[in-house]
Structure formats: C-alpha cells, structure tokens
Length: 210
Image 1: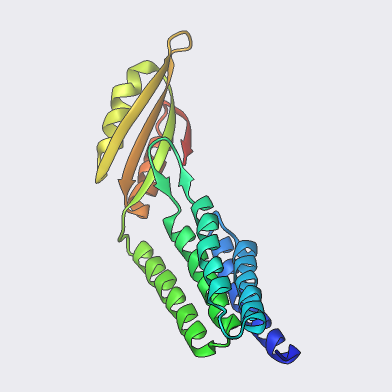
Image 2: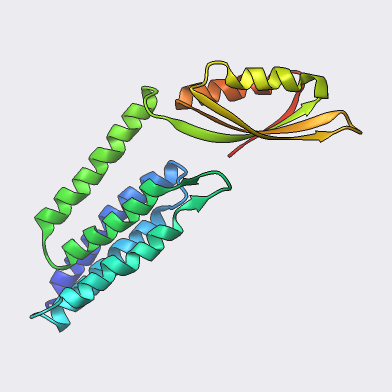
C-alpha cells in the first residue's frame, strides 16, 4: 500500500477522533480524547496492516479488533454498590474502533457516515438534557448536624423527585451528627435544584454527590 494512502487514512482517523474525544473531555466524561484517539488510530493501523498483509482474507485480523475492543469497553463501565453506569462511553469506544477499522480499509464514505451519526446521537442527547428530558441518578452523602433534623432531611429528599431511595443512615450520637446515604433520580435540573436546596439548610454541614 502506498505511503500517501496510509498517511491519509491515519491522519483522517486521528483528526476526527481528536475532535470527538475533545468534546468528551470538555463534558467531563470518564473517557477523554486520548482514549478515543488511541482506539481510532490503533484500529485503523491494524486494518491497514490486515488488508496489506492478508489482502485475500483480512477478516481474521479485523475480527480481532472488534473482539478485543470489547474488553476495553467493559473497562469503561463503572460499578458502585447499587448501580452500573458508563454504557454510552463503552459503546462509543466500540463504535470508534469500528470507525477506525472502516477508514483503515478505505471505506471513507461509510466511515464518515458512521462518524456523522455518532455526532447526531451526542447532539440530540445534549439537547434533550437541556430540555430536562431523560432520567439521571445521583448518589448523595448528606452530613447533618443535629440528629433531630434527620426526618426533615428524609422528607426534603422526596419532595419533587420522581424516585428517591434512602440507602442508609450513619448516626454519631456523641457529636449529635448523622450522614444520610441516598439515591435520587430525576432530570438534571431537578437534581441540581434538590442539591442546592439541601445544601442551603442550616443543618446540612456537607454534601457529596456521586
């Protein structure tokens, strides 16, 4: 394969992966631009090698990309004691491996179409988020000064939320303090409003959001 063709495919994959990864980095996602670049150009490079070394049957090497990238995607899943999240990030890593592979074998139109559809999904999801559509879940650690305010905190958690679940309460009798561990679910705007309302109560000494 000519060097100019190899450079075009690698540079195109690098540039488009960089743009997408940079957006994910700015959005404070757990996987940043470096991972998307590595996945994209790595898949592209292996696809180029597969087509160049095994022009008659490159499928064996190409299928190894799809299988192997699944393990990296699984590593993007984040598990807590009560939930697993990161599925979108894991799926996007897998898609970018396919994107690099497609560009690597010279299917530019298919690769650019795939890349465009990824952006459509991201932009629509962002639009829905700004409209308050969609359900988001946060784990709250609420530190309370004064155990007498526990009931008030529990009541405040439930007001205006689609779903809430009090996981546990740690009580420090000696210092008359407590920590509530709870899951709340709703739109992003609802969650932010709830967190601000709790934080500004006099009995709330600290609040941690996960």
